Image 1 (cartoon, rainbow, N blue to C red):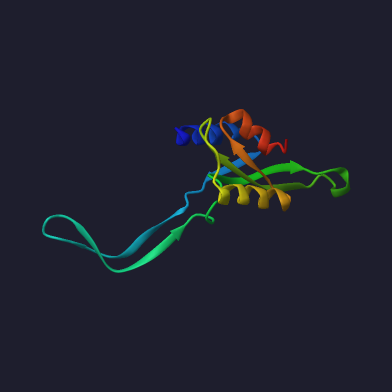
Image 2 (cartoon, helix red, strand yellow):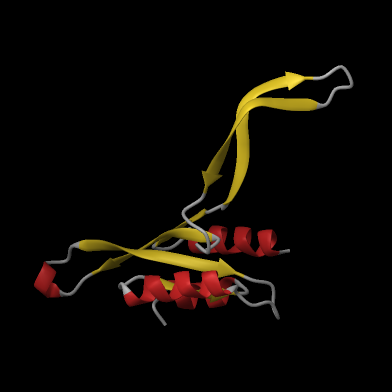
Length: 126
């Protein structure tokens, strides 16, 4: 269900000044694949491959484009944006809460969204 919410958010906000990308975080194994007689796969010389931004990083990562005040002569700036998507009633882990806090403390926009409207509020800096 969270994947459906993520897709709804990306599609809805992609029509605005927000660009969000799916951030899959995890680890897999890579190496030489050998097929055994029974059809099973074996990895020779395995090595771990880590993917995603970092442990605890949000489901959707991207930027919100804003036009700054006249002091900057109308330049556009991309503000780092991170949206952690949860089903209603579910809560972020401690590492996810820490990531959200770090983004906010450093001038980005981040938070937990359960639907398109809550994600829009995060991206708008509310």
